Every structure is written in structure tokens, then in C-alpha cells.
Length: 120
Image (cartoon, rainbow, N blue to C red; front, side, top):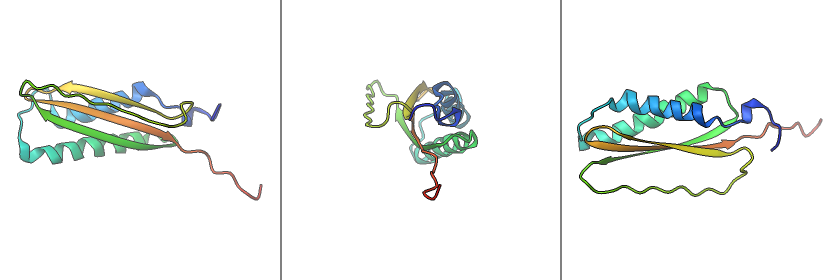
């Protein structure tokens, strides 16, 4: 999809800012590990990202993932694999440290083509 306009341009910097704001507003700088709150925190981060990205009025379908892990000295490895149109689809991720936990948040942006009128 070449030259579809700015509404089909995935702005990684803007998406990263949205993710950082969502994580920061949910977890703050230092966050204790509370297992009973992890599901709520991840849901809140994902929802915040989706609402903020939707407000940008870009022609994208967004997929947001969030992983929280307690810091106990073990490593965390994540990987992304995608098969799509590299000309307009993209992804980005943010990793952050919040005291007793680590967070990895990722957003995948899949461009939605403008609908063409079959009668035109």
C-alpha cells in the first residue's frame, strides 16, 4: 500500500509514548509485586493503550499485549514474529522496570485499507 496518506502511517514514536504513558500511569516508578493485582494491571495498560491509539484516528487495527513479571533474578525473553505488508503494517515494544516487577508492552498496527465502492 504505497502513498495511502498519513492516516495509514504507523508512527512508532507516538505509539511508544502511548505505551510508556499507560505503563507509567498504571504502575508508577516503584511498584510492589502483588499477584492478585497483575491481571487488573495488565488489563488497565492494554485498555489505556487501545483507547489512546484509537483517539489518534489512524486507519489501523491495533493488537496490544502486556506481560508483567516479578523480579526475582531470572531473565525474561520475548520474541515477535509477523507476516504482513511491511509497507504499512508495523509493531513496537516498550520494556520497563518498576521496582519489584518488569513490564513488556507491545503494539501491532495492521493497516485497514479504505473501502472502495464497487459501483464506482
